[in-house]
Length: 543
Image (cartoon, rainbow, N blue to C red; front, top):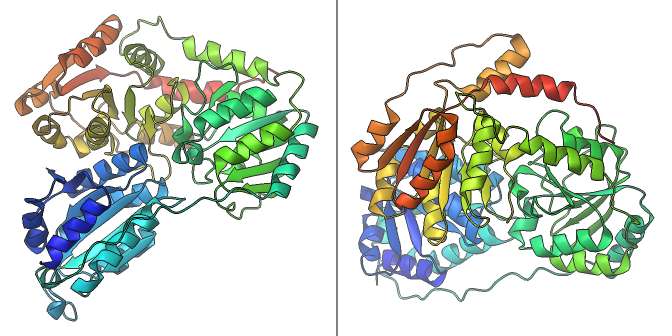
């Protein structure tokens, strides 16, 4: 068989269901081999959209999402989505065609050293130099991408190698085993927690990656310790649980911060420093930190670990909970009450343009606990991160390591493919929407009903927010938008425009019921951004 055929068989061996990408001259042998494969190729309109689809598919399923491009500009277009997946710890395998090995040594049309290009943004990058190594390269790419901490892998496949004959078979898939933490570390952690006067849990993305949310809830309930979560760990403890302190991560003093300020012991579970730097919650470096994760902590002067329980998070939490002395009563209940009141403050606000708090509230009302909201990056991300009351893990997807704009629409398509029984809403600003809005056609073609909720302010609202905070005036942030309703209809999708605050919730419910691709144009009042800044500066501790 051809090396390209073996390559596709190796992908099948890894359980690949979808490849997101764009065909090109240098990947034509692989494209032809896919015609005889059960793998579905999702033809996209831009390689960045394809990479974002693989990114979200990987973070939702735990299995590597796969994206593919041709060489040169096709490969460089993958970079933003691949870097996003790698920094956000989402397993992805990116594949790019390459020119023949006979012209890689010289200046030649569209030739780049793609392996060197991808090395800084992946865990593994390799070129297939001979057909015999196809099984090893594919197996290693998936193994590395999916092993904790997950990330991206890159495969460069020269066109002349792809068409060579080979007599090989894919390598058996083996899953890496996560060991349990040493018993003496469990004992040390249990003693520190039992002696704590005011402990708090800081839950990170690793809890979701290791499927440890239920174990975390049990741990918190048994020991009576409240939990704050990072942006990417929303839903690890349901917001309705009395132990939930909601989300922490703004670069400002927010309500959950007061619990961390008063805590003597901070139990960091699956915490990735890229999510929320310890400078923000441990500015004096004086907290006693317990690190429960699969891997050792990053080195940082504000993150000096007293005990590190390294291994399977679920088993570590269970073992510590059995040994540690519970708190006599739950600390920081006043913080919890203040957070609940804050989230509901604008539930009945009918001002127009609509306040961000009201948009988030109505979106939560429209979605079931297992439905999925994919947030793009912009001012709306801050509001979604702070205000959206997630009840399950992986139901509010937020890019916060690399924080790349343009992820919401392609990400929503991937979410719908991964979980077709759930409702999926892409929550995006107008700027982020226009970066990958072309993938609306992909959604329609793939029959993935999604709702795109556009927060429309005709400017880069998050940058305006920063400029006003630093300089008191905006600079070069405005632009014009198309008529989003007509734009949606031009693709064959449905479009709605919200013109009163009281119409938002029924419009969301109608859009979900339409069971097709729907775009909602919603004017947002981002005057609330600076109001929040001033409010947080004046915030007083509820303790």
